[in-house]
Image 1: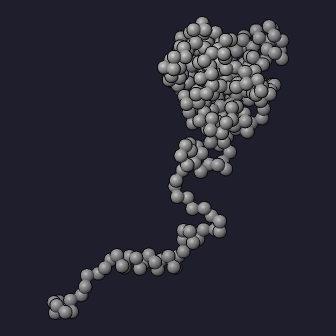
Image 2 (image 1 turned 90 degrees about the vertical axis):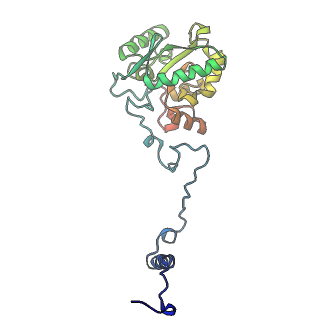
Image 3 (image 1 turned 45 degrees about the vertical axis):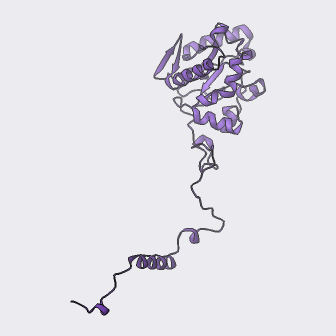
Length: 257
């Protein structure tokens, strides 16, 4: 049908129609901020600079639920005098040989980067004094230390089999070639001091950080004993200024068996 020019219908303004429909729906079915309980916080999606993925929206979540601290194969497994590996004769897969030592692959890859960084800083050439130890090997080491120093003193230096981080393949005892790869004098070296401050960037922590923490970890200061936990966890520990896994995860202290 043709209309005279003055009676021709105007094109529909769909923008007005949609806006009106949305406004009507909001009145009939209030949702969003209007429906939120009093005091609710609306997230804008912004995250403070420097916040890790784990910290995002997880401030009230127990840390043990963010990381697997129980499985022997986990990068974050916590093994100490109160927490044996499960199974106790656990054998890690995918070990890599570095010199005379064997190391779990993730730790080996991180160690290569750490070693390169130490060399770049002209602090010496890192070497691994000890890496993976089997249940049987740890049994021999433990027995030797106890025979040499007595049970109490010996067990502050050597773990019982099944209770050693070395059995996971994630722990390494490091030194420098300039020290003949001996761990004894490592703590006074420039490399040791730099590693204590920077190992977290490569996913390592100094697992037994000071004699003041012996009542928590069960071991005396071992500046050479590095434990790979992954960059994320190491960064979280660094940012919170927490130096032991037991304290970070709120686990019982393990001064003795």
